[in-house]
Picture 1 (cartoon, rainbow, N blue to C red):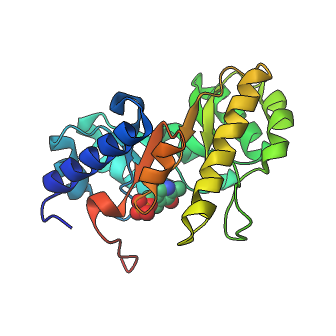
Picture 2: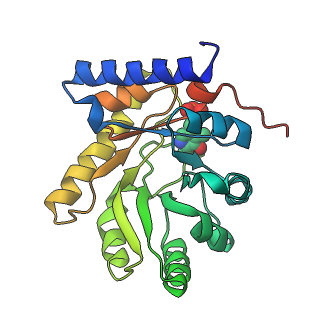
Length: 232
Ligand SMILES: *Cc1c(COP(=O)(O)O)cnc(C)c1O
């Protein structure tokens, strides 16, 4: 892995562009969401110096701390991890987007809180595209009903779908997860859910496959910031 953050960012952008070319897509159609969880505010400052403004995190407490430390920078925080219903207040206060909406009671709690603050939140619905027990998300065939239930919640701006592929060395199995998400996005649009556009899929280990399968946004942590240490 290249030494500096700048070199690693450069390398990831080149790999994204190359995957786009291979898939016959425009590199501008695939966004990079840097996932800064576990990395210190100082690392994020460095990333901001390289032009990054929007960061993925998976814990509301960490977002709160970082948002406070980096309050001068006007950053956009995106929650990508499991959100407990009792953490909705912090999520609403600091995040501009949640990519892991996976259940109705969470949607209701968010809508209530957002409503009382007169705010909205961009939403991606997390979908379970593999049989891995550790993976969260709605089953794909629950999506139409769930989307109908969200329609009355004006504060939730549904923009698309998110998934984590199966953790496997089998490229076809990984591709299958991404393909399934895209298929459901297309199906939902055909059924009139036109707000379902974005596909957040692909991480450090599999983002090129995700781009080939139609990802509009890759979430990159370790390939950009380095190995995470969970000891602190
Ligand atoms: C941590 C995390 C990522 C980034 O993972 P890397 O493999 O380090 O790129 C992406 N998405 C979610 C939901 C995560 O929790």
